[in-house]
Length: 241
Image 1 (cartoon, rainbow, N blue to C red):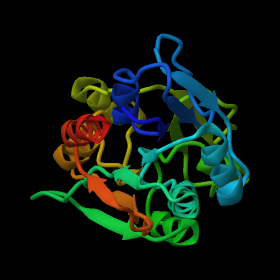
Image 2: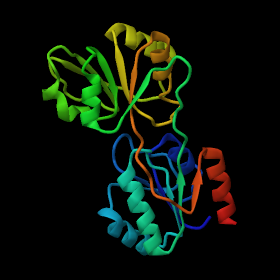
Image 3: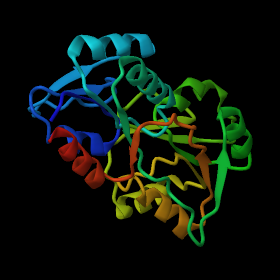
Image 4: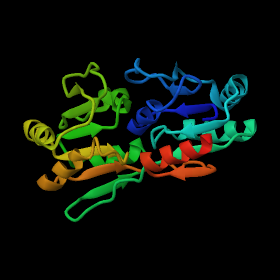
């Protein structure tokens, strides 16, 4: 395979990285655990925007850029598309489909934090599954609400917020127990499309709990876009021939 720079962020990216040899680079932003059992090179940290990424691509002789970052990492995806164009190499992207509401779902899409907080006013026991962003707003929690936050790591909460550190995949029985124990009356989620975190939506559906869904950002166009791990691996194999 020609030299690949893989920008990670979703579960499928690690599966791709496990197929790569030592000439390739798996790039991580630094949030979460860094794998130590890969044959490819692992790079952790940012690049300094599109210009820095462009220079890295040229310095390392990268021939293909594969964006497998989180669907909400819009700035990184934008930088990747610009850097590939400036470097004269193709940019591909693995973009798994968004979840779709099913019968019995009560989904309410919100565009930003201000809209989310407004939509949250009627509720008392929300469960946030947005990552670390709500930690910036702990001092703004209304007295009638108690927040449960789930993130990759445990962080300090306060008297009206508890932070749970947990990593997927999550299982439906555990999610049922969490909703029951915390008496969750509203779920807040990004629409990541991940099967590893989908059980929370099933439990919300079972319990008639509304879901406030953060709208997906618009991502830049790329040369090739894939929806599944399997078609991505197939395309990479063909590219290396």
